[in-house]
Each structure stands twice: as structure tokens, then as C-alpha cells.
Image 1 (cartoon, one colour):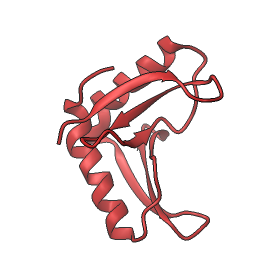
Image 2: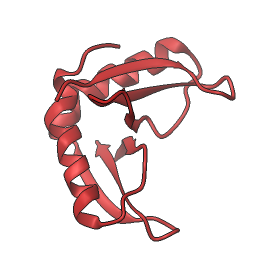
Image 3: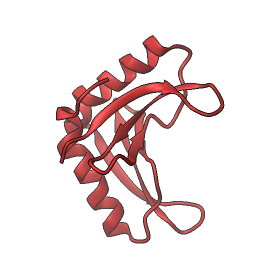
Length: 107
């Protein structure tokens, strides 16, 4: 499934990166903002390079939805863009990101 990374500013004017899926929806993002476009671009490239070896954790969010987050070297590097109704769906989404982020286009 083709994916692509984008770096930019969101509605509040803060800089981050987003991973988009084949249907033009955001499937993951940095989970944080950055001080500059350069920092966000570096973080996006780092995630792309390390996504296959990152540790993905699936957890139940505060409203009962299931989410995932990715860790590398004890630092959170990405989070799911959306919650899922089941743990299995969250796990499947995390595995999709793990399998495809390294070959994504961009940033």
C-alpha cells in the first residue's frame, strides 16, 4: 500500500509530520510538534528509516478506543492518527505502518 510522509504546519500553526495512507487519510503522525520545519523533516526521516525496527505498542485509550504508538530508543516516535473499535484493528493498523512506512514517499 503506497504511503507518503508530509511535513508542514497544522491549524494552530505548529510544525509536525504526518504519514498518509493510500486513500489520502492520515494514518499516523509524530504525536508532537517541532520548533522548525528542519526538525520535523529530520524526525519524519528518522521514523521512516527506523519504522521497521521500532517497538509498536497497542493500548486502550481514555474513551475506550484502541490506539497504537511506536517507540525507538525509549522515545515515542509516532502515534496512530485515529482510534479503533477493537484491539485487533489497532494492531493491524500498526503492522501496516511498520510494513510500509520505510518505503513511503517523502518528505
